Length: 130
Image 1: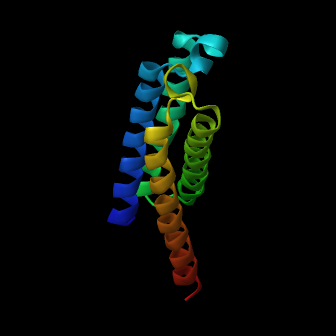
Image 2: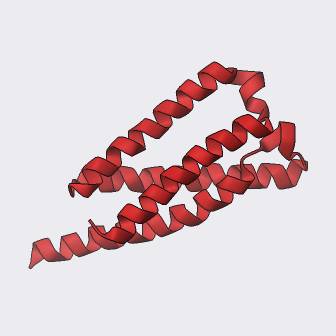
Image 3: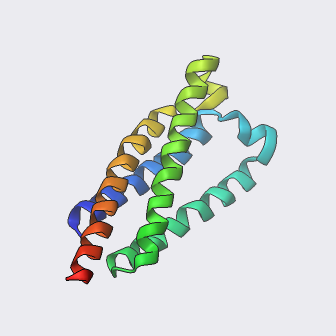
């Protein structure tokens, strides 16, 4: 696996952690209204551990991990965009739709991660044909 993919994936995981802290500290309203802090943190821990485990398999060049990582990057892009759009539309950040600051990083990093992984998948396919 390339250093670009590893580095970008690690940056995405860092933005993911920052995003969770941002939601908790700035009062993402869904925490209180739907989940409660305990269930919110448990759910997010699970949603963080799965991609963290996938990077191990991605480093070992497992094809399923590359496709799962594309899905993870796509979800992070959608998550980040949703927070940004909700904040802009409602005008509420604190006690509202917190997560847009780290969400911006997730969107940018997610696009790069998708580009790098797709490039690797295509290169692997070309190499296997030769």
